[in-house]
Length: 443
Ligand SMILES: Cc1cc2nc3c(=O)[nH]c(=O)nc-3n(C[C@H](O)[C@H](O)[C@H](O)COP(=O)(O)OP(=O)(O)OC[C@H]3O[C@@H](n4cnc5c(N)ncnc54)[C@H](O)[C@@H]3O)c2cc1C
Image 1 (tube, rainbow, N blue to C red):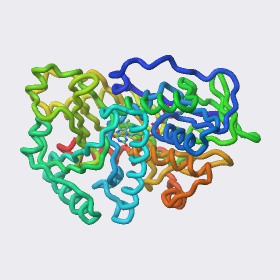
Image 2: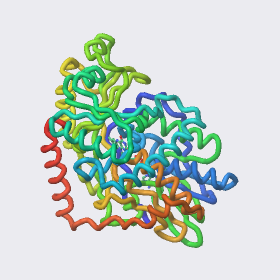
Image 3: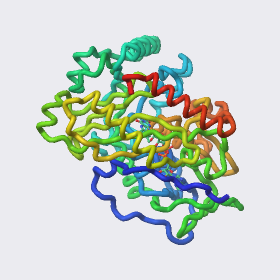
Image 4: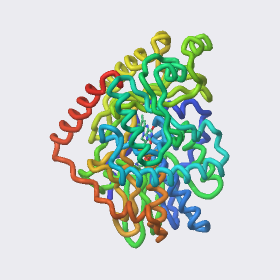
């Protein structure tokens, strides 16, 4: 099976650029055999590696990553590891009471698994911080959404607090927001620091991780053999943790939507700019409308910075053009200036985009897709938590280790079929454009 596409990640992985340069990559050279092979070094791949090494401490496990660790989506996201329902395809992030209670159970299992690694590997608090997050509303409609979501949380016995405009201004330095719904269970990641931290610890403590080693061919005889440009690994069991690129391996064809979203990060603010901005040094806000703007302020490695994320586009080719990046940059600048007029002189230092993988019915692409080949893909936009969960569950499934969560994931529907092209492309992009337009000042 020839792998049809390798990942292309537009723009710099900004979070990774703030960190010291990584040691030279260990590229796979020559032929190797292993008990297990994991393909992909994001949230799912590293969780699978961790879980396999717990279940089979004496087995040889190899992980192959196409790029450098943290250069892909795992190191270029906004870092919200959210415990509560966060269904991006819905109008209000929720999916009904029973489904939401299941989601909370699943997301918290993933967060506990990630926290265990963060604790054991002694990651700094900046990398993994269980500090909660805000859902910020810039409009009356957004505020109403926050109130409705809070009522929904109360029905599930979940704690929350609503901040008024003055409290939001005190938090953010910006007078843009009408309310903020604080929920305490989200973890904020410095995503590249977290991903590099756990990959480094897993590699040095237990297993081999080969970077810049894309799988270009995967064949099955008695065992699976993965070919890279300069080596190959043969193993009886393989976990595919490549998110949307599972399509490039020939699985779940026309069942997955490849969506890009985009972010910009300012240069480090000067001390005068920090004073003019006011507010607290670290905070994180998702938008009250799923197609609005996510904003973070950070103040540790790399100095005081603001990060903006918005816009989404459906790109079945899994690549985006420079023209798209320029158009997104204009939206980012407008969203930044509207919120922080006191920082008019502050330019963006980094701009980037990255892949999400969604299914129409918001299910994962999970399970044994061929004998000994397990998929832990399609995280529906919340890959920090769902990727961790699916990686861990794929390792359990492949090892015959059952649980209620695994049974639920195995009995979910398959990702539903997409309409034929060009209707899928036209329909999805029109829907997202419409969503961005109706998001109004939340964008
Ligand atoms: C700008 C942005 C903001 C986001 N914000 C958030 C957020 O705040 N919270 C959240 O939960 N999610 C967020 N996401 C989504 C999140 O990053 C993804 O859902 C998550 O990274 C998916 O995890 P994963 O491990 O399944 O896949 P990935 O992180 O995509 O990892 C898969 C890895 O497989 C590798 N790979 C692919 N093909 C091959 C091959 N042939 N051989 C070897 N390796 C291969 C890739 O290089 C990649 O590193 C955001 C994404 C973007 C782009």
